[in-house]
Image 1: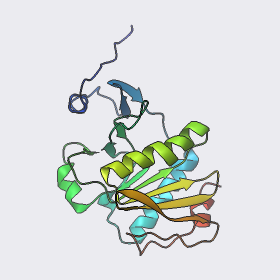
Image 2: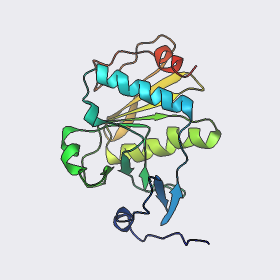
Image 3: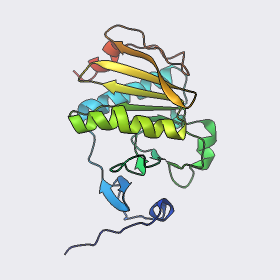
Length: 196
């Protein structure tokens, strides 16, 4: 039996959809695109980052791996209207705003930090380095990290004058500098060692 996939004319209509599963979907041109499960090495890196943020004093309730949906503007053809970043750090105000659904919409304050771990492949690289970068900038995410296992680098971007400025592209034993999480002390070597 074939089940027809629903179409949505607005993001608000999509937010009311529940297919009774735990599947995660991105919304593209009114259609649902199911997201595949994360690869184990990327999951290990994300878990390590969660622990590092907790050790730096960030409350566990504010750190959301894979589950926080972010509504984003469509900038170019092929963009989705929502993203599920690998790791999101919320602000305290989000705890009340996300009681019914862990979705940050365009009318809410942006998250404090988004971290993406780049998956292998040209399409994934382009999405994390270019498309998501523009979308996260557009909604005002003040800090965006691109953790790149292939290049063994961590690119830290900070929102300045409505654009992302490069704080640094850290590699090897460089101490990563976070503009908004100064108590976070780690190096790319430490991050990528967990996925070896």
